[in-house]
Each structure stands twice: as structure tokens, then as C-alpha cells.
Image (cartoon, rainbow, N blue to C red):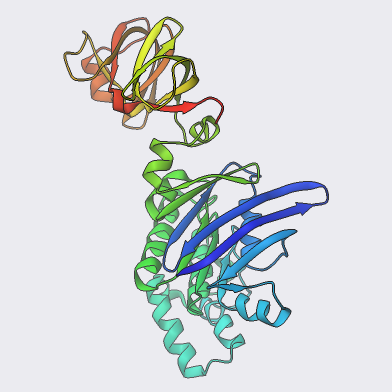
Length: 360
């Protein structure tokens, strides 16, 4: 059964379209990540689902109930949803009281509240600091308190808006671990807006890509990043090799793509004559000093134009008659003497090429 569903959801501010025909379905216990550039409409969508705003048009269902059908029903539905903002709301009170507020507003007994809050304090690893004033907390600690307050009421739906924005790597790791624990211990439906694509891959069952107020693609994380639906999605998810060409032949879905005189072999059902974009992830490209004798059908000699170190890896830019970017280990840089102006062979498999129609 779906926990949250939106049908043709639209939102306008004045004459400006913020969201256009949003259709999502999130099952109970599922985690959906919303990714997209700043201003794409992610926060607006979360505010609509949390019933903080009324949509211009379209429907929102919570467990099959139209939440906008009547005011009383809307209020009851909202009590079953928790929303943790990018900048969490922290009250000038102890950590314990911050977590307990939602339970007190719901009229829970003192004994129940103590048992519940003490249990959650252990989950968020803040038991020793429960009497500390929450306004003195760091950004990561404040986010943990906000998450604790949200799960204390055992919501059916948990909405997270950029849960680790502006946090340091250690705090980010702790928040991600906490979200993972919530997923394991509670059967809570989670919809999370994030700018961190690796976070979406780590935590979500599915990812929706929201661009210019429209959901362009919803798929499992691996599919979004390996098989983007169009060029816009490919660019956003970081596919650095997006090479335009024309299909010159296609036999049993093995096609040849002309790239200004060079030919890339790929798997696609695109027809001869179609203009397409060939997408190759940098980590799928192998570099060697001589033409590789392997099953990989695509091998091009080129000149290295730039070498950039990225942590334990290196980004190698190559001119093969068309630009190509490879990602290799620093050990490979040293072993292959990968320096500017040196020649190198770049090789990748036919199945490592994702073909997108330019019109998509």
C-alpha cells in the first residue's frame, strides 16, 4: 500500500510555475530521495506534502485519503507527518524538553514521555547531555535533536529537507547513520530532499530527479546514475563524458555512433540517422600505453591535456579527436606516467556506453 501519493500536483507563486504535474508514489517504509539543482522545487514539494501549503491544483493522498478534502481531515493527517527543516527549529530549553515537546502537545503521560525520550536519547547518542540547553549545540547536534523530536511521535511519514547541508563530514556521517537507524527500527516512510547525490545513493530505495519544477526521472539509484533519461539528468548526476554524434548503423541493437570521424560502438535501439549523446562514466574508462587486447570494442589513442588529483584518484583529460575524461588511481598515474602531452590509449566497453536521444 502506498503511504504518500501525489497526482498531477502543481504549485504557482503568482504567475510563476514552481511545480508542474508532480506524480510520485512512495510505499510504506520506503525511502525516496529528491535530487535536483537549487530552485528546482524540492522544498516546495516537501511543504505541500507536509500540508504547510495548499497546492494550486492536483491531489495528495496519505494512505489513500485525500488530505485536502476537508479541514479537520487535513489537521488529522498533518499530525501523522513530521518535517525536519534544513535549518532545524531548536527551542530555548534542554535537549530532553526539545524532544519531549511533540509528545506533550499530544497529551502523553509523564511516564510514557520519560520512557520514550530516554530511549530516543540513546538512539541519537545524547543521553549524557539531556539537560544541556539545546541552543548551545553545534549544527550536527542540533540536527540530531530535530530528528529525535520527529521520530518521538512515531510519524507515518518523515520529511527531511537537506538533512546534512552545511555540516562537516563527521557530523554528516553521524546524521546518515542516524537516518539509517531510523529506517531499521521504524517502518517509517521517508522523503528526503538532498543536494548530496552520494547520500541519495546511500540511503534511498529510489531517487526522483526534479529539474525546473518537473520530475524527469524516478528510478533505483543505480539506474539514475548509470542510465540517465536525458542529457539534462546526465549533466546533473555528474556524467562528465556526454559526446554528441549520429547513428550510422544499427544491427541487432549494436550501433555505431559517428563522433566527427571517430566511431563509438554502443548498445541502443536508436535508428540510423538519429542524433544522440553517448554517455560514458569516467570510472568505466581504462588507460594503457598500448592498444588493449580485450573484449572492449572502443579504444582510442589520445593526448593527455590535463591531470587533476582528487583525493586518492586522478582525473585525466584526454584529446582523442573528441574530449574524454577518465578517472584512475594515483598508482596508475605513476605507473603509466600520465602527464600532459603524453599519448595514451583510452578503452571502454560497448556496454559501458549509455545512449540518449538528443530530443529526449
